[in-house]
Length: 187
Length: 123
Image (spheres, rainbow over the protein chains, first blue to last red):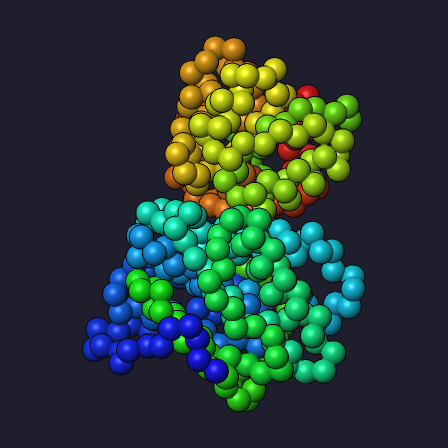
């Protein structure tokens, strides 16, 4: 499966940056390719068409073994955090919501009974972007397969390919890397 | 705890909705603004809230600018202002404290800690 935009051949100055689960990366540098591999996880790629700045995050908002015990608002807070980190970093570099477009990738079902997890991740991404008025220009989500996504941050070009499930590690409970979760400091 | 009025300032509608859900669930009265400029406009046209909770990274006027602008008005000198941010660096916290912030809460927030902080700074 190919994404919205086909890659041209990669120049020698290409720098590949892996965006692992719970992480994000932002760049405006020509040649920076943000890469990730997705199963049930979702990656949101944002691109400001005017500022020519792009970024990718990679998150999983459901724990495969948690059943229905997980508070959806807890997941919502972690998801919002993953999105806000990405948006804030892009805004610091000059991006604006009004000129930013989004791609959503992943949220697949790799094993029977796990559809709820992938569906939850992609529903969160869609809902967040709609509420935050960021236009979704492309989606490649769902299905019972894994994906490899490559996103050129400075041009917004993306490529999404189906890959063998053996190339991904099993989904695990994950939350974004937050060193001081919910820490409160009164001055 | 008796209800208090809180102005939340965040450029993300999703984050404002989460905050509204949490704070209204505690029985508080919640007003919203999308950035520092909108918050100042709200403050100039309404009764002073009991508390302001503001994000830092916002377009037009960020949280630091908002805190400085509010503190420049004598009538808001004692208004509690909590920062709620994805950032947690000492440099940013120090800047917020110098501007006149009352405290700093790191996102993603813990509702129980947020409620406790609201109680402490408003009573």
